[in-house]
Amino acid sequence: MNATALSNQHCQPRKGKQQALAAEEAAKLLRALPGWQLREDGNAIVKDFKFEDFHRTLGFINAVGFMANHEDHHPDIEAGYGHCQLLWSTHDVGGLSMNDFICAARVEALLAR
Ligand SMILES: C[C@H](O)[C@H](O)[C@H]1CNC2=NC(N)=NC(=O)C2=N1
Image (tube, rainbow, N blue to C red):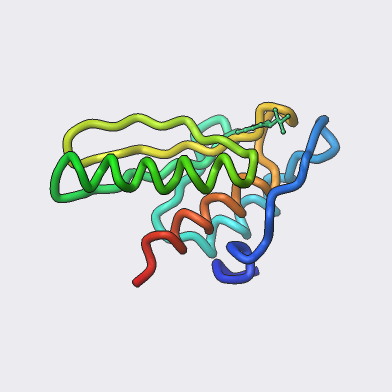
C-alpha cells in the first residue's frame, strides 16, 4: 500500500493483541513512509521533523494535534526550537496497528505541497 492510499484511510477502534501488526507487515508498510523508522523494540514508529523556527514547529504540532483528535489516535510528541519528534504506537494493542501507519501517512499529507 502506498502513502496516498494509507492517508486516505481513517483510524478505527482497535483493541487487543489480535489487532497488532506482524513484524513483516509493519516493515512493508514502513517502506511507504520515507523517514519513518521502527523503534528498537518494534512497537512504535518515529520520525524527526525540522523547521525554520519555533512558530513553524508549533504550527506543525497543532496541525498534527487537530488531525490526531479527529482520528481519535494520538502521538507522543517531543519538541524544541525548530524540531519535533513524533512517535506513533497503539496503546490499546500494545504495539503497532494500522492506525499508526494511517496517522503517519496523514502527517506526511499535511506536509505535502
Ligand atoms: C477510546 C479511544 O478511542 C482510545 O483510548 C484511543 C485514543 N487514542 C489512542 N492513541 C493511541 N496512540 N493509542 C491508542 O490505543 C489510543 N486509543
